[in-house]
Each structure stands twice: as C-alpha cells, then as structure tokens.
Length: 53
Image (cartoon, rainbow, N blue to C red; front, side, top):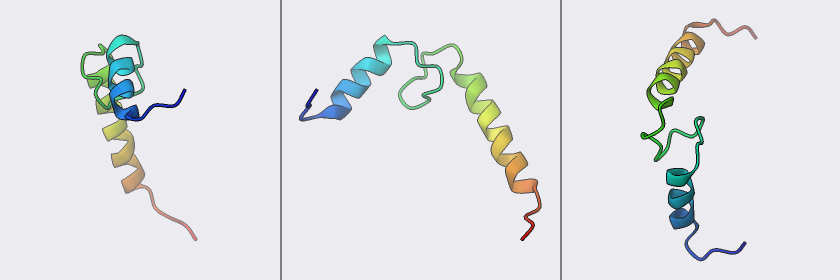
C-alpha cells in the first residue's frame, strides 16, 4: 500500500498492535522496560568481549 506519509501509519499501527520487540514509540507495551534493560545488558556484554583477528 502506497502511503505519502508512512511515519503516520507506522505510529498508528504501533499504538494499536502488540509489537513487543519494537521499542520505538512503544512505551505502552508491558514488555518495553524489560526488553530495553535486556538490550542494554547485551550491548554491555558485547563491549566487554575481546575481539580476535
């Protein structure tokens, strides 16, 4: 479906659907804070890993 302003449709869909993995514009989702925390922990762990060439 062609949409001249797709960001408006995206906001509408996010507010109406249960999209737990989408954090953007989705603070109302019950899983939002936990997923945000888990992603932050994963980023931190990745930064701490050594990189082998």
